[in-house]
Structure formats: structure tokens, C-alpha cells
Amino acid sequence: MGLFDLMSEDLIIMELQGNSKDEVMDELVDKIDATGVIKKKKKFRKALDGREKESSTGIGYGIAIPHGKSKAVEAPRVAFGLKKEGVDWQSIDGTKANLIFMIAVPEKAAGDTHLKILQMLSRKLMDEDFREALIHAENKDEVITLLKEIA
Image (tube, rainbow, N blue to C red):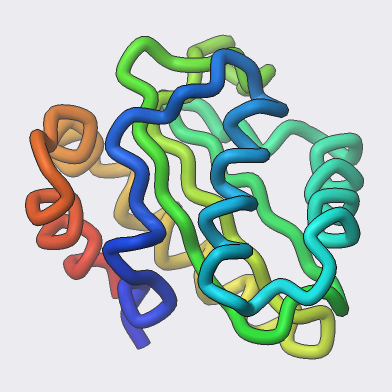
């Protein structure tokens, strides 16, 4: 399974409009909700907020990976948003997040699926050249080509 198996072009936002972590999370939740895999959007959003309260999902290097496990999610999905000027995500290294990946997984499949997705993402996102290519992608086709490398 590659990362893009859990995505589609519709789950990519080239220019996030939100200027805060909450606004960006709402945008990405709306994208995932539009795919029909979320039964109760507010319940899933609450799971995301609960995870953020544990510790920030801003992992540094301009990356945030908000993720939630919930009974409100029927199938795993990953959404991606780009915010060139960044948004404050209380990242551990103090950088603003430019590359935001949101992971939605059903509670019953949380363990394996959730960890596999996080592992795939973090391994590839540690590559500075890959991050730079993603930040400077000019269209969804370029983003898709890059994301299909994540397996």
C-alpha cells in the first residue's frame, strides 16, 4: 500500500485559505468529509482536537500531520494541504507548517493503518529535497507525482 492509495486529487489543496491551525484543520476535514467516509464530521474533528491537546502534531521542518482515530470515520483517508507562508502549529522546532497532511482512520483499524501511514510519511518527509519539491510544486499533477513516491 502506498500513501496515494488513501488519497485522490480531490484531497489535495494547493493553497490553503486558513490562517490558523483550526481554520486549516477545518478545511482539510471538509475535504475528507466530501469523500463520504466520515459519518459525523464534528465527532471526527473532536478526535483531532483531542490528539492536538496531547501534543502538537507539528513535527518540525515545516510539517504538520494532524491525525484522528474515530468511529465517525468509515475508511482511512489522507488529505494534503499546502500553505506557502506557513501557519503556526506549535511545532517542536518553532517553524510554521507549510506541508499539512491530515490522516483520518476508523477507530477499529487505528493501530496498524494509522502507524503505517505515519511511518510512510515521516520517512519520506525527512528528505529535504522531497520537502522542497513538494513546497514548490506548481499544480496537483506535480504533487500527485511526488506523493506516489511515498510507500
